[in-house]
Each structure stands twice: as structure tokens, then as C-alpha cells.
Image 1 (cartoon, helix red, strand yellow):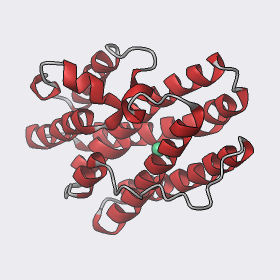
Image 2: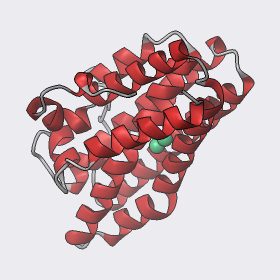
Image 3: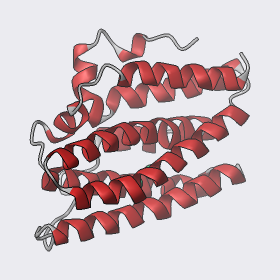
Image 4: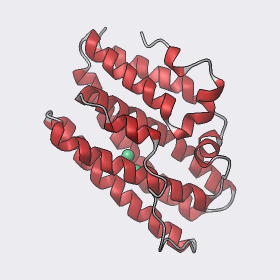
Length: 219
Ligand SMILES: [Fe+2]
Ligand SMILES: [Fe+2]
């Protein structure tokens, strides 16, 4: 299959899964039902930190310069998001003095991503699939913030964080469209995407109630 056609199918597959989500479902899943702005911003700090660490971890063992550029940008952007979210939490009166976002260790998704060895899998699972999930989660978060009148947090996500996550996703998508050119590479990319969707905390409820994201065909 042509690589662009392959990627379009992957996008469709992800969109079909996202379409099954209730309007606050990613937020409920990641916070285990504790849907309030401060809890969700603290969880976001952990996601941003993990995304930055992973991009930096992959950088020296990824050979394609285009992929290095995407990872380096992401490494910086995610840490910048960490700073902005911390600042917003402080504005909301949260005390982060003793807060360690990794106090309970890294997430299962981080552990999975860290083990990926090929560039195609890393880009498929990281910038492409994880950022696609982030886009959906953030859109739900913005709607939630507006619904409770927190326009400051909504604005931060809407105007700054979300467009940058979208850019990361796009860089991932472009890379796959260029490099996922053989059945073998497409299989690696598709598996990495499916595993990411199955492991992500934000989609936990969905994974539990479906017959198995792993069984959804990609071609
Ligand atoms: Fe981010
Ligand atoms: Fe991102």
C-alpha cells in the first residue's frame, strides 16, 4: 500500500476509536474520576514531563535528521508546556513546592515507548499517536474548563499548548507518510499505534469496554 494511503487509514482508525469517547471520558479515565482543573493540570505536568524525557531519550539513537529535528523540537516544547502549566497552577493558588509529578513512577505508556528501538515505531507511537491522543484530551479539557468558567486555563490550552501538540502530531504524520513505504515498516508503525492507544491512560475506559483495540485491522 502507498504510504500516504496507509497513514490515512491509520488516521481513520484512530478517529473511529476517538469517536466512541464520551465528552469528558479521557479526563475521567486519566484522573480516575477526579475531574477538576487542579488535578487535571497536575496530571498534565506528568504527561508533559514524560513526553519531553522520551523525545530527549530517543534523540541520540535516532539516525534520520528529520526525526531528530521533530524530537528536539518536541523535547523543548513539552518542557515549555510544563513551565506554563506550573505557572497556571500557581495562579490558581496551587502549592507545588513539594510536588513531584513522577512520585508514583513513570506511566505504563512511557515504559512501553521507552522500549521502542526503530524510528518508525518511535514516531508512530510518539509524535503521531500520543500527540493525537493529547489533541483529543486537550480538546475535552478546554471544553470542560469553559463549562466551569475557567477561561484562563482554556485560553492557555487553546492558544498555545494545543496548536503546538497539533504541530508535533503533524510532523509525525509527515514522517510516516515519507518513510512507511514497505509492508514491514507499515506493520511496525501500525502495531506501535495500536499498542499506544491500548496503553494510554486517557483511553483506559475505552480499552476496558471494547472487545479489543488490538483486534482492529489497519489494512
Ligand atoms: Fe505538550
Ligand atoms: Fe506534544
